[in-house]
Amino acid sequence: MSTFSAPKGTYDLIPPESAQFLAVREAFSAPLRRAGYGYVETPGFEQTGLFSRGVGESTDIVTKEMYTLTTRGGDELALRPEGTASVLRAALQAGLHRGALPAKLWYSGSYYRYERPQAGRYRHFSQVGAEALGAEDPALDAELIILAADAFRALGLRQVRLLLNSLGDKECRPAYRAALQDFLRALDLDEDTRRRIEINPLRVLDDKRESVQQQLTGAPMMRDHLCEGCKAYHEQVRELLTAAGVAFEDDPRLVRGLDYYTRTTFEFVHDGLGSQSAVGGGGRYDGLSEMIGGPELPSVGWALGVDRTVLALRAEDVAPQTPAGAQVFAVPLGEDARRALFAAVTELRREGVAADFAYGGKGMKNAMKSANRSGARFALVLGDRDLAEGVVQLKDLESGEQSPVPLERVVAAVRAKLG
Ligand code: ATP
Ligand code: MG
Image (tube, rainbow, N blue to C red; front, top):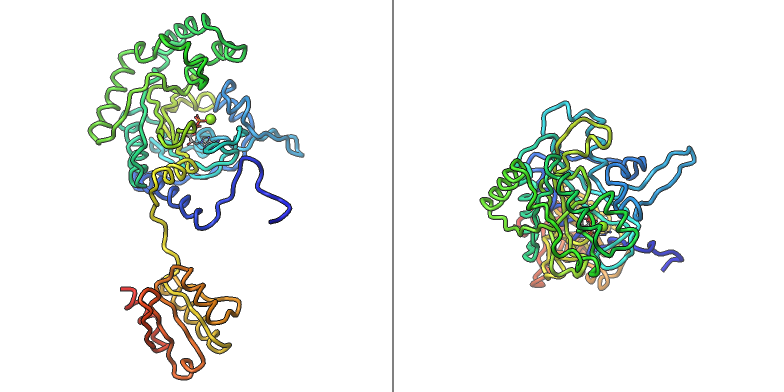
């Protein structure tokens, strides 16, 4: 070990486990690409103000969890704690809102939050996200939810549940907000929470503490205050999901308690993860563009947590399909054989065969050990006598069978064996 270790709340991705992360990222993004989402990548840090406005002044993310810094030049920057605000900022900066709408984008990357580290909760974590900007259409909300649900299923997960709610819009939310505030002001709550009632009362519904949750019985629910437009919109989303065979549970308590989150809101939870159960979430944010100085741009999106999804796979004991390693492992015996076999490996690779090589001048015994460990199906063993005869031994590592093949026809021979 070195003098240093990974900072608190972080961990390294190391083979072979790291392959599961790639498999999850791939499973999340492949359906998006097929559905017309284009890849977007933004910087790992932004002006702090983008997040205080774009995520919300009263959220835990902004008040407690952001990594901020002042640069030598005096800029106030923050490591990105989430993706939506950055992606929307980038889309507006590029003028995508003046092109064909919706602009459909997907991203994948690292996010940073100063949280109390525990299983499934880290200070550096990975998300894959998708945003559909500039359209208000229940089919778009449904599309995103279906893509996420299908991705979890394609990974082999069976215990992911979808929670669904509507948060209303600027027509019906204000009256609901006031009713909720009246209810909350009468409760026995701490100073911080009382302040939250005034800034962002919906967020109080999301309080995880038992002492708070107990008092929330009987709180007014947005569901009972939706205007006709929101009700019809939500009903369409529900119908489209049902028609697509995507099961969901109505959860009237589910919130993303910011004023610019509207209508559809959802979360994917996994029952095998203890209290860090959310594996992804999202919703409609029709007012966010205006909050960061842009035009009206109704949009919907989600972010799925890669780290927790990997934990979910382990909890369900399912192994995602990971790319196979080497198909062929080359074992040279002697200096001349080494040169000839190295050339053969290069040729195999150029022809698309996954091949590896016994480096470091190992003896036969150790080299064969490496070959077996590599998971390769075949070994190519080349000694001086073989070399003189212009052949290489192709050994089936499963059956132990071995036969000579002409050195200049090694690609064709390996191909034929691999089928
Ligand atoms: P939680 O309520 O668990 O804190 P959140 O509402 O803060 O989640 P989002 O901002 O919606 O989470 O992020 C989307 C997904 O990213 C989450 O569902 C989760 O899977 C993942 N995620 C969020 N924060 C962390 C973290 N600190 N460590 C690992 N994964 C995280
Ligand atoms: Mg959180």
